[in-house]
Length: 149
Image 1 (cartoon, rainbow, N blue to C red):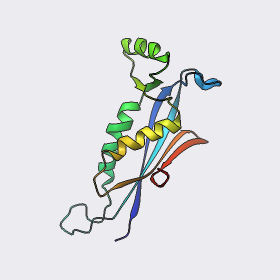
Image 2: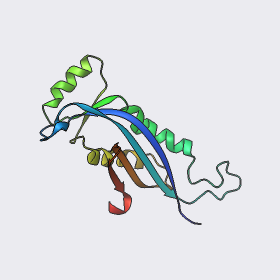
Image 3: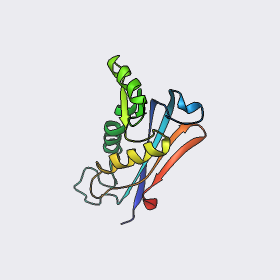
């Protein structure tokens, strides 16, 4: 049976700041992120399976990505916990804001690596993560491909 790639797209709003950066992104700001998740596998051929002909039900993929990424990052602010931004993060958290303290500088590049690990860990055995594309602005995005990793 042929391998088929299935892609589902997601949107979420997230703030971040890049500690030590020499440009405007050192300031706390936000983006309307668009995440494209592509998985690869063979369509189900078991005629008794209700998901006959599907690689993965889009709703199953949606559940994984929403639980691991969208519901966590949407309207949250991400800071590198290994920087003085941790103080600001604690203050915002005390004031009821949603804050994520990451082990990395929260660039699109590092976020897409993190997202890949989280999604891969939840996929069924017969489904592989093929690629992710995290679009930060209309003209800027980071991509992760399994073949490169």
